[in-house]
Length: 327
Image (cartoon, rainbow, N blue to C red):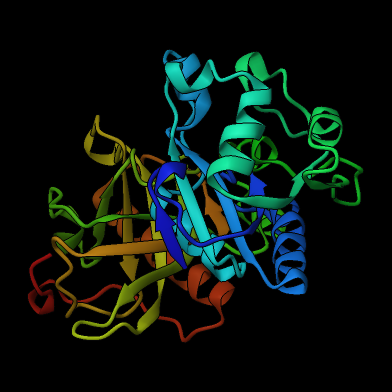
């Protein structure tokens, strides 16, 4: 998949275009993406996703605390996996937001992206003050664009799939239900950094990510999941079973929120400075402060046992601190 940073750089010829932030690339997005790819293949043209960075709400409401569900890198990976031939990452700023919806259609979609068709959700909005919508696309683009509006998809409750719904579930720690809407486990991605090394001393060495800038971090607690690591010297990846702790480490009166992943049964991994992903499978328990370090170790042994059970892998307990490779 080719990635263009701005519509003015696009050079792949006639296209079928879909438009959106696609935060999380959930199942509702996939319905739109699959139809975009299908129409492009049917017409013999290129399938293109037009997305925006930063998120428009971060520009219009800089005071709003709205972490993205996934990083831009993961968003692009998922858009590629959906089958798009190209993605245009449009820088979104206040000047761009003032584009009249008609100019957006004329100049960006038809002019720069050479769109012959557009596939979007029923709730699409674009242009100055979000005054552009599906009806305007159909009316103003008539005789120049074929427009397909995709109906909302939703769960058994009748609620439509949305990034907002995913965020609510992650804030509640319900990563299992979030995965049903996303169509895959929720993922964080970041570079492993040095921590206080308390896990090593307790027999539970961890790979530490910062508590922000890595995607939408679920509520504090302990989770079962996978550490996804690229095999050094190759493009292959491995999924390593893990118990994941999110919080400020109340046992030691910590103040900085971090994400710490202990790979079950492994003391030989040195991941400092390496980019990893963490996939969440299920919630194990809330973050607790124990009466003693010994009680904490016993609880962490139980966390590892339960995580292994959830993930369907052999049970592993704490490792001998003498065997821990520095990380």
